[in-house]
Amino acid sequence: MKLLITGGAGFIGSNFIHYILKNHPEDEVVNFDKLTYAGNLANLKDVETDKRYKFFKGDIADKSSVLEAIGDCEAIINFAADTHVDRSLLDPDAFIRTDIIGTRVLLDVVKEKKLKRYIQISTDEVYGDVEKGIFCKETDPLRPSSPYSASKAAADLLVLAYRRTWNLPVLITRCTNNYGPNQYPEKFIPLAVTNLLQNQKVPVYGDGLQVRDWLYVEDHCRGVDLVLRKGQEGEVYNFGANQDPEWPNLKILEAILKQLNKGDEFKSFVADRAGHDRRYAVDTSKAEQELGWRPTTGLTEGLKATVEWYVDRQDWWHPLKSGEFLAYYKKQYQDRK
Ligand code: NAD
Ligand code: TYD
Image 1 (cartoon, rainbow, N blue to C red):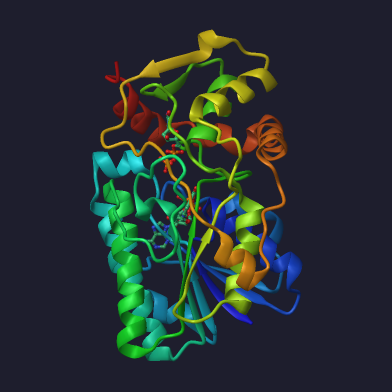
Image 2: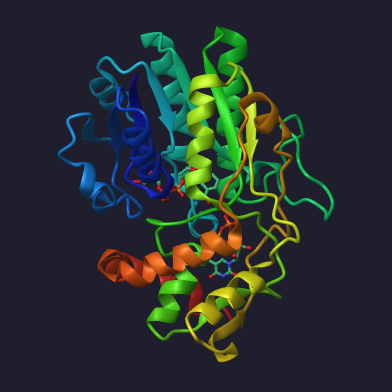
C-alpha cells in the first residue's frame, strides 16, 4: 500500500513511519508535514535515504498542497494536529485551523480522489473527564473540556458525518496518552525527564493526583496499523493500556525521580491547569476482540526505556529546549504560583 501519513515528523507519526517501514516491506510512505515547532525531521534521519520514504512539506488545511502530495497514495492516516492542551488555552487558533479545517480538507480529498482508506487519529480526551471505575466506550457521548479536545471532537464528528453522507471509507482511533522516544519536551513525561537532566524542577499541576492511562507509543502504532488493515469502515476503536492500579501524575514523577537519583525538592507544585480533566480511561475490548490487539509494554518497563532514551539522546532534545520553547515555557509557567 502507498500511504500519505500526515504529521509524520511529530512524535507518534514518526514512530508510526518507522513501524510501517520495518513491518511492511511492500508499503511506501509519503510524510506530509507542515513542520511546526513540534515537527522534527531529525526523527526520520535514519529513513531519509529509504526509497520507500518521501517527505513533502505542506499544510493539511491547504487543499492544493494535499492534492499535490497525494499522487497515487491509496490511504491517508491523519496524525497532523496541534496537540498540546496548555497551548490551546493560550491560543486556540491553530487548533481550529489544523485539527478541524485540516481534517475537513483531507476528507474532501478522500472523497474526490476516491481513496481506499482514511484513518483519523483522535484521542480519549474527546470523552472528557471520567469518574473512577468508568471506562469510556466508543459509543459514549463526547464531552471535551479544552479547546484542543473540542477541536479533536469536532474533527471526529466531521469524519462520521462524511461517512454517513458520502459513505467514505473512514475509521477513527481514540487512544490514551502516549509516551516513548521522539516526544517533544512540552508534554509531561519528556518535560519531567529533560528538566531533571538540566537540574531544573518539574511543575506539578494542582495536587498531581490526576490520572492518565499511559500507552507506549509502539503499542499504539501497532493498533493503528491493525485498524488500517483489518478495521471496519465507519467504526471507532479505543486504544489504552488499562494500568491497574492506576498511576497518577505524581507516581509517574516519583518513578522518574528515582531513576535519575533526584529527590523530592525537584517537585514544584504549581497552580492547576484551567479546566483540567481529572481522569481519562477507555474500554479497549472492541480493539481486542475485533483486531486481536493488546498492549505489550507495561508502564514500569516502558517508562524506564523512555527515560534511558532521553538520557542517551541529549543531542536530540537539547536543541529543542531553546528559542521558541523557552519563550513558551516562560509564558506558560512564570506566573504559575
Ligand atoms: P505532535 O505534536 O508531536 O506532532 C504533530 C505533527 O503534526 C508535527 O510534526 C507538526 O509539524 C504536524 N502538523 C501540525 N500542524 C500541521 C498542519 N497544519 N499540516 C501538516 N502538519 C501539521 O503530536 P503527536 O503527539 O505525535 O500526536 C499525533 C496525533 O495523535 C494527533 O492527532 C493527536 O491529537 C493524537 N494523539 C496524541 C496523543 C499523545 O499522547 N501524544 C494521545 C492521543 C491522541
Ligand atoms: P500532558 O502531557 O500535557 O498531556 P494531557 O494534558 O494531554 O493529558 O499532561 C499529562 C498530565 O500531566 C496532565 O494531567 C497534566 C499534567 N502536567 C503537569 O502536572 N505538569 C506539566 O508541566 C505538564 C505539561 C503536565
